[in-house]
Image (spheres, rainbow, N blue to C red):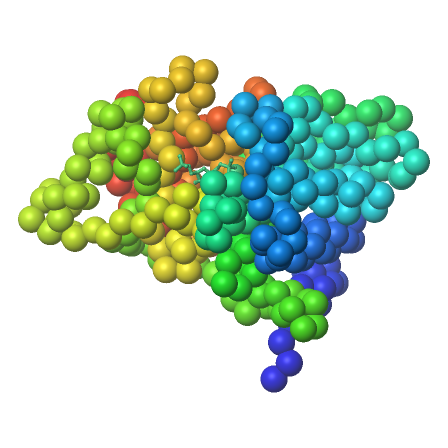
Length: 337
Ligand code: AHM
Ligand code: MG
């Protein structure tokens, strides 16, 4: 049986359902090609000289790994000449990237975390790329886009996806009508549809959180985790299991596959940073994917995709995954941060 490729899936969506515009389809193709190139670089590891850190820090004050910078460059170079984009923004760059004047411009905006899970690069644990596509607001012909054009709530996303570079390389994608998973066939060099209409189970007994931050959380969040730890004789009446990969892509991918709840909640460490994860590059695209798969995504109380961003690199608390468990955390946290 021959399986559908990403290209076939996208062309079908354009032709049969009008679910995607030609421009966006081509843009997704380019991003997915860049992810193949990143996957190739990642898989070479020490043989390709790609491991280790650089001297530089990114705008968030984090030391950049060689692969962070390489992946960022691969995505920028692949996407700037295609004519589909008005601009790009990346977790690794201080401000937006304009399309050079030598290339035509389109009306879409691409945002990405080029290599998520940086602390796992050198230890050969799954890492990934996360991306989100927005449409520039209003008429942008004859002017350069500004940061302001990017500050749209996640509910405006046209496409979101992630690539996970693990034992297999996979691309998980939503264009707003369900979630499709493609596996990279390295011999053919194509993305093959292997996971059709991915769904997140509504209930779970598995939670994912960095417990070492417990002392910094809001008391309601601490209480929820304490109740999970109490097991079947505690108030939640279930024996929970815990998993924390420390790569959001890999933790979310597990949840997309077998359910679970992923949390990087608000914490009290830095009043300027309400959580570690970034709204525009991590929380919004993952929320779009999780919601499209029947799950739920909140900042512990409010829907992430309703947050009106005020800054490009804004942080947000994240609680997402199996619907009924995320709703439970929302009940615990109602009235807190
Ligand atoms: P990064 O984009 O710099 O890699 O940071 C984001 C990552 C997420 O993938 C992951 O969920 C989290 O940071 C892990 O954080 P911690 O190291 O605090 O457990
Ligand atoms: Mg990240």
